[in-house]
Length: 87
Image 1: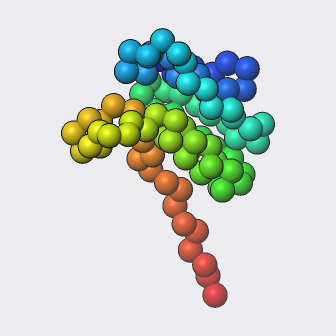
Image 2 (image 1 turned 30 degrees about the horizontal axis):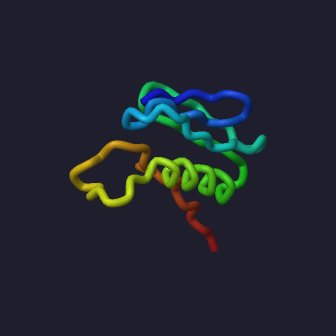
């Protein structure tokens, strides 16, 4: 699988040998960084970054396969930390 950014879209090529690329649009207020096998999304709006992360995860979902055994794809592994409220 090859992941790259082109024209404000995340392009996933050769996902499980498919010839058709999968594309996810990236909004202007979300920045995306690809470092090896890690994709990092940052934004001032936490919900916006979460929506993009969810879209990326859903576009690589394989129906009919057990995720515990077939671990091919892109998964959310770390979510933002909650800010503690001081009173």
